[in-house]
Amino acid sequence: MTNTKNVLAKDVEIKGSIKFSDHLIIDGKIEGEVISDASLTIGENALIKGEVKTRSVIIFGKIEGNITVQERCEIKKNAILVGDIAAETLAIQEGATFMGQSRVGKNTVSNPMLSGDAIGGGPTSQPYSSVLAALRLEVQHPTPQEN
Image 1 (tube, rainbow, N blue to C red):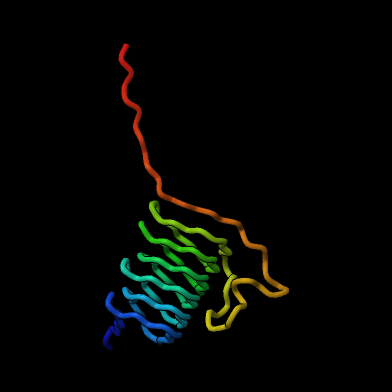
Image 2 (spheres, helix red, strand yellow):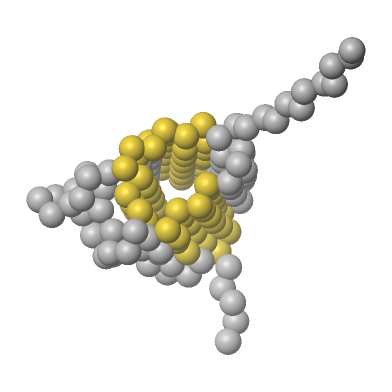
């Protein structure tokens, strides 16, 4: 069995929806929906303007839109997410920027292919936990005082 790795390089620009069935790495620019039951990696050069609905996502680049994942959403150092998240688990590294709301926990998302059910909610949705995180942390050490 071979591991299939699909890659959209940094010089690729797409306007429209993308659907895929094996792990995808995007390092280019996408304007539109990205939908799959597979995993997605957003490269550090990537810019996604639109909804992302996948099994899991790792973000190194920038997303402007809501994310709905069945499993794990990871926002890595220097990544930027402007939008809401619905996921079973969420990890945000120091140095990442996340501006939006999150809904995290088991049974939060049943299937990312269902449009609109996870974010924005229907009559059975639970309230969001509000999160506004700009995690650009800097540590400054005090200088010793002279006596």
